[in-house]
Image 1 (cartoon, helix red, strand yellow):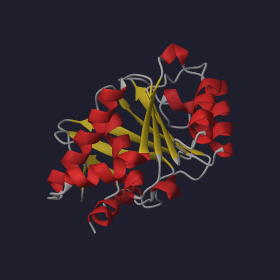
Image 2 (image 1 turned 45 degrees about the horizontal axis):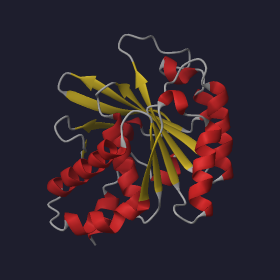
Image 3 (image 1 turned 120 degrees about the vertical axis):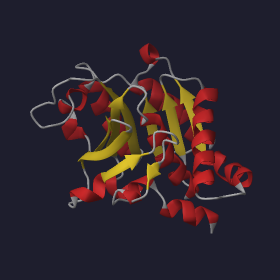
Length: 232
């Protein structure tokens, strides 16, 4: 019952989607925001929901060490438990943490072949077989198209749901398609793009791509104090 309650509060469900509906197998999703606005907190909520459904999440961090990424998960889960008055949080965490594997790279040492090699090691030894992969901290610049195409093939071959965090910058003019410049040149590879937009003391969550037809379904608020989605 506890898991089901939290699954029903899936952040993507609150925006009108299920995890798999917004990013299909082999597909790409992106969470975009300026530094420090809440990208990792939101993507961890998506990951936790997948873990609650007993599906495996591979979290690839190019910025933070394993212990810091692990702390993100615990803090977000604790915030969820507090918001929804859940008491058995320790037991819940112990029951789902086996569904997550954290892998770290230095940015300059990351490549698609290296990722494939490490994932192959995990799967062939039956250590971990991911359903969703999160790549947190990959710099989105003009050189990224070829690596992303390689990751698309990797995602399709392994039938993954692949999410990225993308750092945007203040006062940059969007591309001709309306997407932030970081995503504009590779937007055709993405099925979904969600942007966090600060406005005063509020943080809006807006679907730039792949959102529900009802635009109001994808204009939620992120609570700056807990980094959780505020239910309307």
